[in-house]
Structure formats: structure tokens, C-alpha cells
Amino acid sequence: MDVLNVEYMLGLVPVLLRYLPLTLQLAGIGMVLALFLACLFAVVRVLRIPVLNQLTIVFISFFRGTPLLVQLFLFYYGLPQLFSALTVIDGVTATVMGLTMHFSAYMAESIRAAIVGVDRSQTEAALSIGMTNGQLMRRIVLPQATRVALPTLMNYFIDMIKATSLAFTLGVTELMGATQKEAAGSFLYFEAFIVAAIMYWIVVELLSKLQNYLETRLNKAYNR
Amino acid sequence: MKTLLINTLLAISLFASAPLLAQDKPLRVGMSGQYFPFTFVEQDELKGFEVDVMNALGKEMGRDIQYETANFSGLFGMLQSGRIDTVANQITITDERKKAYIFSDPYVYDGAQVVTKEGNTEVRGVEDLKGKTVAVNLGSNFEALLEELPYADQITIKTYESNLERDTALGRVDAFVMDRVSASQIIKEKPLPLELAGPTFSQITNAYPFHDTEAGRALRDEVNKALETLRDNGTLASISEKWFGTDITQP
Image (cartoon, rainbow over all chains, first blue to last red; front, side):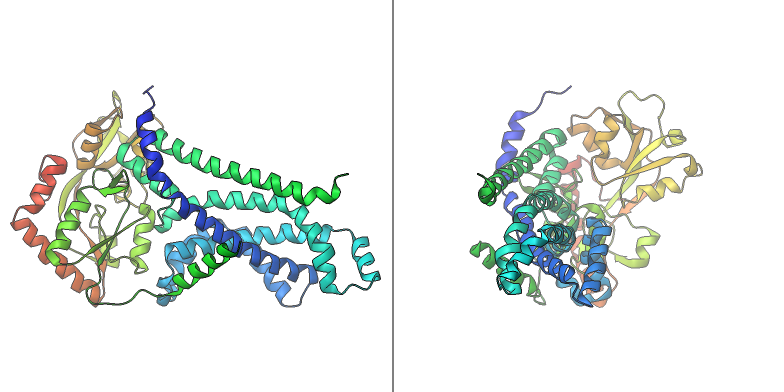
């Protein structure tokens, strides 16, 4: 076995670090948009708003039922073929669109489950003391649902960070794309990809710490 | 949280702005950045034969070159959807591609080469590929070349996005097929136990594909003119010598 080229690995760290912000941006923007969409979908589904409910069901079914890579190709290469004006969608946009729609489909279901999971007696109690529907949602249901949904939502965020590694297929040089190109120049695959792996890992570990902190805070009311 | 939202909105508004159409806009060139020594990256710098030739062409044409890197499988999609003007990635002229695109004059003449793990006594040339597993790059022309062989049905072809050299060296496939020039280069420069197996088995000519539109034809003519100048004044030959120690730009 060849000796690990540690010097090359250390030299690669500052180079690859330049591409980490883009990876985080893709995932960060995707997460904010996906959360927003997912909340809308969840509310539509819980309240069974006619027409919108059916549309949401089809949307979730499609974006949960097809691979993310297929969706990315559809947005980036497929749509401009049908409507040439859509060439303005650049790789970053297409990636964020894909991540947003794909993950909002998953997240909508876990948010819906969290809302439905709040005990009916809570709703009845709130209504019995004269709360409006809005107050009921804001003060009683959503705070409890957030606590339940948080771990799975964080899971999706972590998954989304890693899913950004598909973006290089659309010409977006993020962390994975930069690593692939560096590895192609040096042929030191193990060294290059282990550096990238450790970077992803550290980011995800930091997020897990954040999750623990948030969970402790949200659980305060339940600790005696 | 607030800044993140503002960033998001900023990003969205940036995405919405369409690229301006101008006469002297840069030539947008797609390449994989993963095809040593034609196009690769070292310490964040895009390098290789393709980059040198393209830069020389850009200088000759008085145009800026804007490089877009993407996985090879995405390059033709980017060309098709009008996001790049051409691809500089050793694109071989084939009948199938000629149906969809127009090509510049060839600037590289080469042959297909079988490469095996060092010490492989079973595969000594293209005729030994019967019953073997052979790696090719996804979307590359070598898959089609293999399928044209009379015993194609006895060859298991495995397509790769990248790293097929590594898998051959690891013994996961019996051989890979690539152009002779870059195969020799890989063997010479990289610490992988590989060797050429037999002579080349098909003449290939590589050129730049363009859209078959008025703008595409104009660009192609412009590139052809610059190519001719670079060929005549020896620039092409010297770039080739620099990377390969031999002139691959002549038939």
C-alpha cells in the first residue's frame, strides 16, 4: 500500500475550504425555502383545504417519488429544452430549486405528523377557554409540534447538506466538485476524498450540537 | 435569522436577472476538469492542454474565455440548453453527434487504446476483450467504439463518471479504453500500476461542437480561422509538445 500523502492533504484543506461556503449556502437557502413550503403544505393537508390539498398530495407524491438527481436534471437541462427562456436558470438556482422541492415534500409530511400528533384534548381545552383558531395554532399546537418535528427536520437539513454534492453535475463547483477536480489532477483519490469527507462530517457534527442545544431548550417545559 | 432571510431574497433576485446579450461576450467553454492532462485542477487552478489551446484561441480571436466545469455527463446538456457555446473536452466527431451539432476543424488526432493493470497477461489488445469487463467514461465515444466490435456482445461495458483508472488498477474491471495520448500520460505521471495493451484500434479526431444555428456557425467559423492561424504559426504544436512530448494536433 502506498503511504498516505499527508502533505497533499494538508495543502488541499485551504483550497477545499473555499468551496465550503457555497455548499452551506445551497443547503441553507434550500432549507429556509423548504421549511416555508413544507409548513404551507402541512397546513393545507391538516386543514384539508379543497383543491390545494389534492395539488399538494400530487406535489409531495412526485417529489418524494423521484430521485433528486432526476429532478435536478429536469430543472436544469429539461425545462430549457421546452422553454428556451428558462436557460436563465443557472446551476445554483436549479440546485436550490431541486433541494427545496425535494426536501419540502419530505418535511411537509413530518411537520403534518407533528401537528396531528398534538393531543386532541389540548385543542379542546384551548377552544373551551375561548381561543381563536389562530391563537390555538400559535400558542398551543405549533410550539408542541415544533418540539416533535425538530429532530426529523434537522435530519433533513443534514441530508440536504450532503445532497448538495450532486450540484457539480449541473456545473456548480461546490465542495464535492472541487474535490473531484483536484483528485483528477493528482490521482490521489483517497487523500482528496477523505479531506472532503472530514469537512462534511465536521459541519454535520456542529449541526448535531446545535440540535442538542435546541432540543434541551424546547424540552424545558417537560423537565421537572 | 434575519440576515439569512435577506441573503435568501438577495440570492433569489440575483438569480432572476437574465444574462445580457452582447456582441463581444466571452466564449463560454464547458469542460469536465477531470480529464488529465487535458483538463484538471491543481491547487484550485484549472490547467491542461485544453485550457492552453482555448486560451490561445481566445487571444487570437480577441475574446475572453469563460470556463464552466461540470461532470462530463452534464456537459452536453449544458451545450444543448444554451448555457455554454462549446465543449473543450476531447470531443470526438461522430455521426451521431454530427446530427445534433456542427464541429470545428479537428485539433487533435488520436486512437483508442486498451489499458490494463500492470502484469495482466490475459488482455494484450482489443481482440482479448472477449468475455471481459471494460470500463469507459460515461457519454464518451469509446463505448460506441467497443459496441462496433464484431464480438461486442461478449464484452461487459461499465461506464464511469470518473476514476476508471483507479478501478482498473484495483482490478475491479479488466481494462479501460481511453484515447492513447491521455492513457500514456496517466501511466507516465501517476502512481497507478497500469500499462498499455496493444496498439490503438480506431482513429479518432477531436474537435469543438457548436450549435447548428446562425450564431453557432459564426462562432465555429471564428474558431476555425483562429485554429488555422495557431496551426500555421506553430502554437498548437508547441502546446502539444509541452503536455505530451509529441504533436497530437497533426493527422
